[in-house]
Length: 164
Image 1: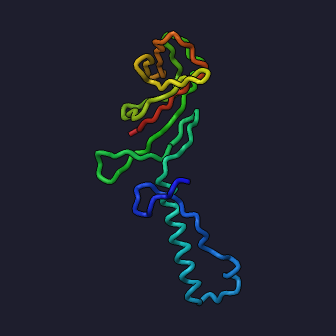
Image 2: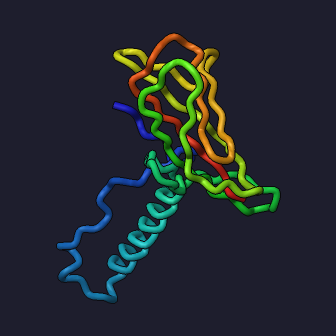
Image 3: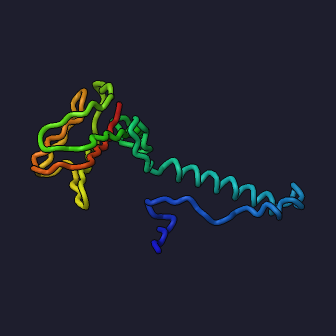
């Protein structure tokens, strides 16, 4: 089983230990110092969970535009820019050049930060781009040039971009 990193690690996890015994609260006097401490710990735990969840990158890969919770630096100090993600399904990918409309209205301040994908057929998976399969994005389409003699049964491309 994988070991969780310590609390000083860069990787963050939501704590799973139970911090509240509801049965114990039913008979407590509201002025009890133990109850007050419990409420403070509950607040701290909720705050920690919120910060951890908000700092995590989303594992969602949608066909529609989605803010994936990644943040990029900005030229302006202490301002972070949100990363958007959209998946493009090419379906079958035969040899040659292919284009699929991405449906995005790309503004002048946009920057693509990650463009990648995978083409596959029975028990064989090929990362895109690679030395035989080219990938690029223009104002209207995602473009793939399959320079192999292979016809892939599935092909998906992930676009990640900034809008400012």
